[in-house]
Length: 248
Figure 1 (tube, rainbow, N blue to C red):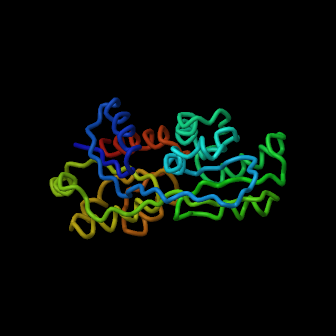
Figure 2: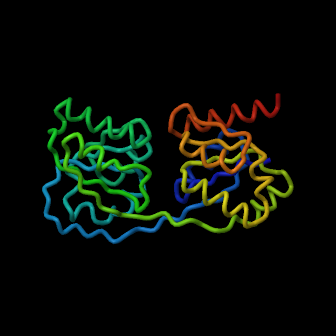
């Protein structure tokens, strides 16, 4: 019996390794594909800090960071994983928020209160093409000047791997891990197109947040569980809880 991970590559590999270390068999079905967007910053703005809501935003511009002289700036990261990728890319000052965009907004505002930033600081927001909330607008309303630069997009993958379809058909998948609203939607569409939607939705759907979970509930999933906080360790704890419940 396997655990299905829908997280995009390359982060899904680290997730798989962690699950295997916990004794699970893992299947991978990345439902979104990372595509960098050419970065052109011709504004000549003097930035005071950088904000990022995804590690992919850093990966997309990693080869340019030194030439753009961005590594000297403090970087506010949405969570610890993104913060680790930022440090690996060469950022010396990385401030980590609690795992979602709302927490990142609050952490930036706390930075102003702590004098890490001035309230009228200019922030470079390295963003994805599809944003779940207007973080730039929210920070702008608090007095910050936010310049949003799209650095990547996540394209839906339309088909499930054959071994995953076979796993659903044979009832060999114990639970599914979901990391974003868009990947959950792509998973549902692919499962529907492959004719395995009923089997796919009959098992526990473990979600990183309520926003993700709502997509699965609306599709008819009856066993939707949400991590107590938006990080992977909490999601793993949710998975273990779901599996214990099924065995009880």
